[in-house]
Length: 92
Length: 130
Figure (cartoon, rainbow over the protein chains, first blue to last red):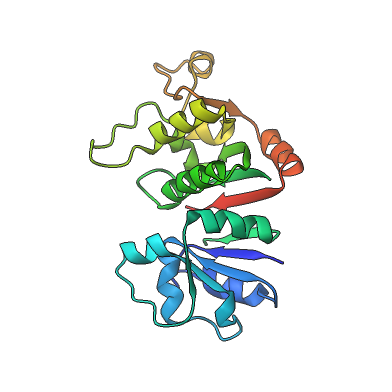
């Protein structure tokens, strides 16, 4: 099952929508960098429990997360990469 | 687990370069193996010996060099991408008749074959975009 890493804001990149198009059950979504701006409007086909975000990147942008998404640190990020295969980065 | 990182992001122009360095530190601290770091496209600027950011900003090139010394990392810079962007080793500068070289210590220039090799021998490939 894939770990999808999205690093661009949905405001100026199709990265999140491209990711959502290939997202299947068992996959995990990790939002990093400007990708965390997607936390306010995620595609419906991505289940809440699959959504992770880097806490450091959310804090750096002053974003308040209201949903039950999982905020993680870099160590947990490494663990997710070990747990899932392949790891796909979306940044265009 | 063996990781290879591919970095497309130049320092200070996109956040991916800083994220990659943080991720590398985290995976090494967790006891995993970093098989290779491949700098591609604008990511070759991570290997410039001439980067001189203000002292109160992060110095990503120095960060990679410190990690390389500590863990004997294989930091590989795509030679074709590097030549296009004016990132040259001493031997490449001489061969191409250029007045200076700027490949930082700890990095080496190589071809895409090194990326193919890394894909074959690593358990995970993680890409950091521009």
